Length: 271
Image (cartoon, rainbow, N blue to C red; front, side, top):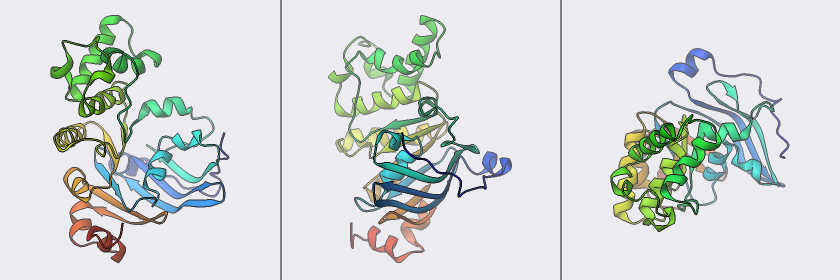
């Protein structure tokens, strides 16, 4: 287990601001890998039912911070997280919080599609089954169908649900992973460069899906593509050397950023 410290932060968002403006709040977040200070004093509020894009050069800390939001860094022995991260006002690093239950609430889609070596149906049914979300086979069937529909995959796979998920194309596999995340009815979906391994056609389908999912979910996406961030997000946060440089409306970030480092990165002067 990691050594988690939250004693240096005492304030949490008010209920009104949480309900109206903030889904995820981070205060003075620090992340260490051994002696390396990977995330430095990050403060950000992420709005509900909005796509927020994390951009910045490789190694800047955007994926590390993303993994703080569902405590995936707990799985790294050398990693230590300090500060305060809350979802709907609840401190997710509180010892009473079960990381397994947290990850049902905060789903994640990784850079490389990673379907289980099971059928398409079982890939999607896995989460609802282990979390006890279906009382009967009919309930489970309905959950699987709904998740595949939300992931824009139902029409392509409805006649072969017993086929291996690994037999799908790369883009279909990624949408299957999104269906798997959606199936447990999360409130937040984290996406770590979900299109970097996909061709342009598959990327366009996933981007269209992100736009549709925003009506029901809060989405945070790490992307190395400036064009993708501009297309899919309403808010953008720029990371550099472990620091959150700035965060603002995406249109403003790409036309009139406040920080010169953001301007230089967007213009391709480094990265």
